[in-house]
Amino acid sequence: MPLEIERKFLVKNDDWRKLATGVIYRQGYISRTPEKTVRVRVVGSQGYLTIKGKTIGRSRAEFEYLIPGEDAEEMLATLCEKPLIEKTRYKLIQGELIWEIDEFLGENQGLIIAEVELKNENQVIELPAWLGQEVTDDPRYFNANLVTNPYRNWQ
Amino acid sequence: MPLEIERKFLVKNDDWRKLATGVIYRQGYISRTPEKTVRVRVVGSQGYLTIKGKTIGRSRAEFEYLIPGEDAEEMLATLCEKPLIEKTRYKLIQGELIWEIDEFLGENQGLIIAEVELKNENQVIELPAWLGQEVTDDPRYFNANLVTNPYRNWQ
Image (tube, rainbow over all chains, first blue to last red; front, side, top):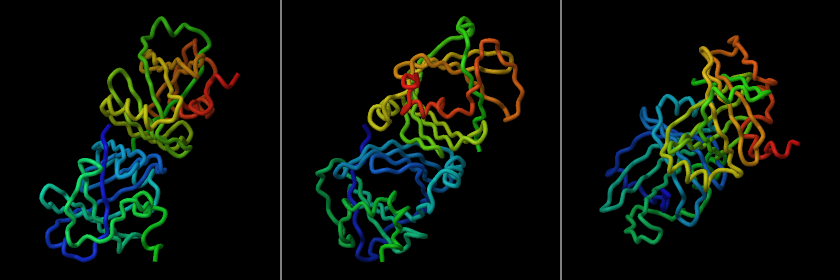
């Protein structure tokens, strides 16, 4: 089974910005429960349809397919829960690791999350100095949960 | 938007059988609400992932993608509600129309539904003599509803 294993952190300063380039991601959920989510995403003109299973520890099953951007836009507009999640995703390569830093827009503006994908649950990684608190296990930071409880409501 | 427009009927005899050839379909639902369903289907070694919107009259939005059969089997086993829907689908061409006749297995054994896809909601079609009662508008016959209330429970 394809597995996604990742760790998530907040950031404590802007030192990552000078090294990273960003692309706008727009996404929404056709279905989201703790057991499984069905996500539609648009990046540029490309659409993605992604099914994820339940998160257990740092892992979850993930099935992702390329779909026409036009279909994805249609599903975001008509089938996905609002508000949609919009963010700029920055990528930053450090040694063998690829850090993805999501700077959220709209209802989640102000929130920045850095994620790294691991090869296995126990992989030891070097943590860059700009990383803040780890939030891997905090469900408030799941993108699917930012739909109903956006960051703007936390303060 | 891609639309599916169809009519559904019961059958009143077996006259359709001598003209049709059948293939086993196995399918399950990752999500199903009256507003939208996410269906996984396996036919032979091919997988399909299908998102459908709300049925309005005889129409609903439908987005369907080919996926690896292996992924589909994995999702049927781990992410889809049980029981799965299993049926033999027969195809029968009559003039311009393609009739799909589903003979259900397992929990829905005994149920046979004939479906035809239309070009528009008001297309006039010739009804074969073996067709029984029309059930287009009866939600009990939606495949998604046969998961929680299979035909075996109706009697």
